[in-house]
Length: 272
Length: 178
Image (cartoon, rainbow over the protein chains, first blue to last red):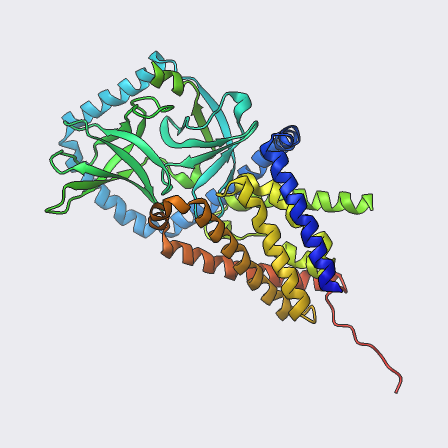
């Protein structure tokens, strides 16, 4: 008898779910979803900030705990810096590049929409963040998302008031990039299990050095050229193979993203 | 009745906000705790199957945006896991002891992850090779273990708190005249 009752409830629930799915995809539920999203947004921003505060507090404590280790690291870093000093010319070139990057933003008048992060992925399959701006603010799928002018991801899904940003370090993320080397190598940047970034299928003949800048190539709709993605960390070269893999280091800590910009006229940039 | 609905709605919103914006922003491994699963267990044990199922469906709708799955698939995961839990609870569990609740916690975690994985595989069916390469299995298992451990601790704490303030989980002895 009890089992029969549960079967009946299960059937009703199944019908309700089907109905919700139909109403969702026919956009009948859209006004209700928008009202709920708009109502929750301010609260979610505050709650996420509180959560990030705890996160930062923990990370700081952890860093202090590893002070000895940090000191040793800094010593090694100092030696590295002394070597780097001898490459002053190279640094000047890099400086030039950064200036051009800044000018690029001003000249092309790339308009960005500032957005707060209100949530993150929790499952173990994808690495994304949820931001508090959506279609109503001009956001659409495929637009580039930056943090401190560095590309951190692309809009994966946009609803009226919120959007899902797939981070570049996600394994499912693909981004057309170019390396600032003598060959101006191009490739596709993908994520490594949410931990790092890499560029596969680079011809062995192309010279890539540690520290080379990686920028967007502009070959992808929605993503303008010359946006900084990161720097080459190391290059994996296997003798006898046709291609090599470059590992990229992003200057952004993907665990500490609170505030982002969505580049709105990216579509206009690539279309022109 | 309306009072009950409002109470559940407020509770649901609080759980959703806590889950979507607070837990996910915390550091690893705390950000891996799925707080709504233990809540479903306690709803089932303290209230009834109907309330639990309604909660799971509405919660699934709310949290669909924070899922890696498309709406069509993500909305089924939680209610199906809840149905499986209810079925197991009715068939095999005769009391509301801490052991039963810990077992139910393990069961719902297994069902939830199993369904999530199956649906994710269905969604990426045509890109199976990319999918299998994209998953860091070491990290996946370590976060699953953390999830299980932290969830168990959460359930234990919640059990003892509920037990302290309420009689609903306490053993009841029926006195008979001898």
